[in-house]
Length: 340
Image 1 (cartoon, rainbow, N blue to C red):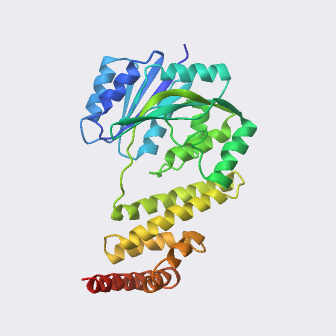
Image 2: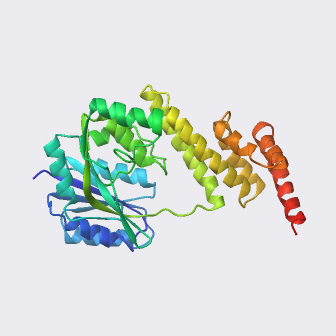
């Protein structure tokens, strides 16, 4: 049996790591190397991982300073000895036959990667998520139907390959090449960049439908207004990475720019309308504005505002963010007084 490495980046997850670990240890495919990358956890996560290493010789634990999820992935892949790599997030778990199914499908199809579906656990409900039909994509189809579609048409690869690193099997050799070009500072979209780079190296990939072997806990939640400032900065870095990747692959990146307009316009309005000090808002908005110049979406949203509010937004975009925010604040205060 060929050795498969399972990489689990983990940070402060003492509540869930045992469920994740047990699901990996109970796999029907047993030729495994299990690598827990403890990314500077402050709780008992590292101790729990060490306990599994003492219990099963297949388990290895890497303890490192906190550097974010991408740095943990890079560390785990760098240490892997397996011919293939599977990922699992520490708060998720695996069906007992997922690695066997992914590996056998990859060998049968002679592919460089395989993706399966997953079970989404959210608010007590469970739903199946995956491709509608199984399909092999050769190199030309990867280029035209996945990569070109992402950069120039849809801005998404979820219909065929998906953004996430989990629920897939990768060739270690190709994955290391892909990660060598990735930005280790990304804190959102890091899986997307890795997959886009990986797909560009593949001769073929296979999408497996009707099998939902990965168990995913939905972590989606509301973002606070102050959180939008941080999220916008993170998204700007992702946008720079995707634009650079488009340039490297000699693409225009039209869909990337459209998606950026949508996300950054939403962030712009959430920051302006949310709580927070004016100078803090000013710093965040000044980073966003250069990426909104000429964007139709923000112009349309401003056009829907009341005249005085519209005036304050236009001042922010065209003249002074600070004085535009002051004007907006004055208008909102006056509106509250008039409505009493």
